[in-house]
Length: 160
Image (cartoon, rainbow, N blue to C red; front, side, top):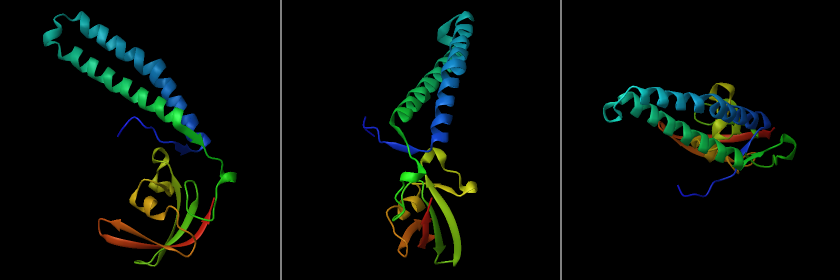
């Protein structure tokens, strides 16, 4: 993983959630982390102060999360449903598939990792199924390597 950041396509709602989360981390979590460090520092000898070490570590983790979220927001591009190409499977398309192993039909929406929620039928484009479906057209069969073996999905319909 180099320094190259990849563009992340998200819906407007997700970008708003990311901005709100960043705002909370900056306004609430960061001052709380600083207070925890200050309180631990007042308790004396820093060499044997596990509380101080833990507070410093959690601050480091928080700062890393803030930096990652800032990077994600900087690289986020809002994808509007009206400019999605539905001739092939791409991010934010809804895909109706037939699992050729079970003959069951399912519909998934392909989303960014941040938005993935299997219960809501939203699968990440970085998941094995998501990767297998990307770029496919109606009528094509996607073969997905799953823990139980290869699953074949026939693309029935692509929409938004």
